[in-house]
Length: 411
Ligand code: LLP
Image (cartoon, rainbow, N blue to C red; front, side):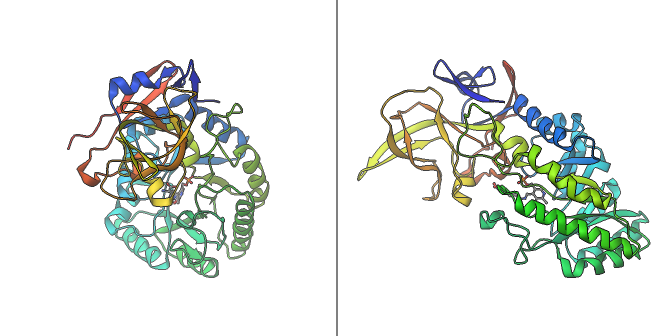
């Protein structure tokens, strides 16, 4: 579905005029489309057909509690990576038996909190963590379900910071040591090995790494049965790539890797293991359905270079500065003027504070409004108070209405 489109030259989110929202609520402002999120969820669900599965939304992509409550109400599970995210997931109403907890550096108190919360599985990332978890579970006298996160040494051929499944990355236990870890876990009175976990990276746009990973994990599960260990689930992580380029396509397909193509292929492989399939999508669920609205403060020229200084900066949306990530930038009021190149920069005192470089946009003036597209995932969650700037407000659009789901921060 198309969540953002021009109507009479004004950019709308569903049936809401974004200029009116920005004028009323101020900028910078995150805006999300509920119908967009629900339609993507539906695509994921359809892809599984009737194969046993859990879709665990990765809170790190967007942990707005208003949004989380809606996702929990949709029957979705949660993937969390800290005690804070676990608390948010529980507060939002995700059932503990649908929550997976990964992370290379869990503290003792976070492990205890997860065990006491009786979540679906703690995803264990090292032999040392496994031993600490066993000791804490024993002290609490709670039999604890664990999954071992494997590092399958698979290259997604993406941005180096978004690659997590290569042996050079800090995540998971190498395949050569995973069997040993499972055998050790199975012998502990207070551990119950229930699954195998992997997450090979984020914004994956190729199908081959997924297939390779599913095959490796399935073969492993089958071999593990010979050791008398029967797993219940295989968790292939998140990572479905989204289209940061063509944001207003008529086809309305914001996902570069189509779950309806990929998931049936994955199921075809893992069904031999007899395990339930878990996926942990974050970006693909919410990324394309959110924008960051910002207003032009000043324009200036310096030696043939044109700068458009806006009121949103790297503290509001870090992705361009951190990963050199491309986000389309659209004027809220479409003008068919001749375009001119400009750097769209923020107010933060850093040269690396930009939202887009060398962008061809209509001549922009003080007061004009812009939408930074595909900012629904890893936008607000990566926002900070750098330069003592308050974080933006967030609103959720539903058809022709919107509501504030987080007030603008007051420092
Ligand atoms: N599961 C685990 C264990 C993860 O580490 C991640 C993302 C996900 C699931 C969700 O992946 P997704 O479906 O969203 O691709 N800040 C970066 C993305 C970092 C992703 C880290 N892990 C960005 O802005 O692109």
